[in-house]
Amino acid sequence: MPGIIQSLLDTDLYKFTMMQAVLHQFPGAQVEYKFKCRSPNVQLAPYIDEIRDEIRQLCELRFDEDELDYMRSMRFMKSDFVDFLGLFRLNQKYITLTPQDNGEIDIRVRGPWLHTILFEIPVLSIISEVYFRNTQPGLDLSEGRRRLHEKLELIRRPELAGIRIADYGARRRFSRNWQREVLQTLKNHLGTRPDSQLTGTSNVLFAKELDLRPMGTMAHEYLQACQALGPRLRDTQVFGFEKWAQEYRGDLGIALSDVYGMNAFLRDFDMYFCKLFDGARHDSGDPFEWGERMIEHYTVNRCDPRTKVIVFSDGLNFPRCIELFRRFDGRIQLAFGVGTNLTNDVGPEALQIVLKMIECNGQPVAKISDTPGKTMVEDEGYLAYLRQVFDLPAPPRTGPVLREPPVTR
Image (cartoon, rainbow, N blue to C red; front, top):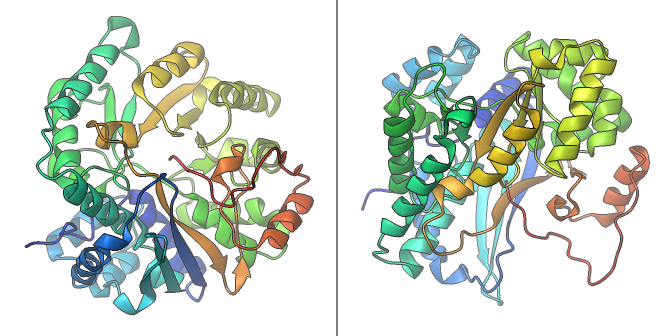
């Protein structure tokens, strides 16, 4: 049977944009990623052999010439990086899967960052699809289609004509075929004109196949790795943003704001970065408060907020997108990245799964976002040190401490 992942393009664009930066800026970096499923009462160990076989097939894939030509067509992809992709394949020796007595699976990815960065999205997609095809065999997708059309009806009101939504749902999708159907349905109903409510997808393969715009810039792992790669921990964000600007020279200018919380981000995102970057992305904390603070920050730093973009991407559904649109429309440019609510809203509860970087060059790395449940780290001492460096208060402890609580995109 063909593998779930049939192309190395079946991943998020920001994995390639970060990978190019790694090739040019940090080619020798060594990293470790750890998998976690925090959905209650979910046992993945019974499917470990099936998951291993899918990963084996993933590691046999290569980029073909048509795929490389598509990558070359992106204005920000450099020729030497695409040439490197022509030689690239994922190596199974860098990933280990170990069943646990409680029915969970310990998955570790260890090796050169340049050669492991593309594991995350396809491995999560594999785990999700293997789980659902075993636990929901032959599921009638009519409920998923009904919910999708309900979402479309919500945003097709005249007063919402300016809302802009992209698919960010590859990692926790119900299946590859369902994500493709969702995108095809959105395209059929919303169109692909420049003023369409559908702006594109983070999935590079479906962007190519369906003639959609591929979307994405940087993820948390990029700024986390800079904790080990930069000259001084306190300057991690500044170092990361400067290296990004050095790589892309003004392109791909959406900065991620929540690796150390909003206060630390605004301290580092000074007038220079306000003017250099096109905007910022929200991925934790109260989105309404965040949006207000971004507008105020741009105003204080002599930038007209109406010339900047804020991207919301934290566990969104369509009603929340509409609420945010109504609050901020006309005050700043808006974009919304909807993930699981688009690609795994078919009835059964989607899995809360992540594969996060926890170490770079032998040093622990972590993020401390404005949503405490998004923290994932194995070294609590390092986490405390990180809080001290960035002047962040310790989270309140009102019950049992969960080191890696549920995470939503």
